[in-house]
Image (tube, rainbow, N blue to C red):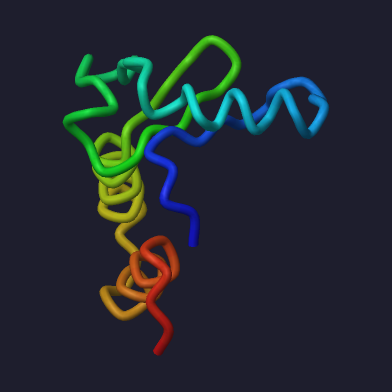
Length: 89
């Protein structure tokens, strides 16, 4: 699993040398969550999308809200959370 704190989604195609330079600078630049305002230095992971960022904590809150809102059975909810965090049963 990657150790990058900032993961970019939906970016344009880049040359390999551009990716290496960007990866080296990614952890040095501050990226703020569009939902809670925390920088990438204060969260576990940050997902960068086109014009928006979300931290792992805000993502977890959203997932938990959606699970509770849909009133899924608790075993099913636990399977989703386990899949989200990469745990195998």
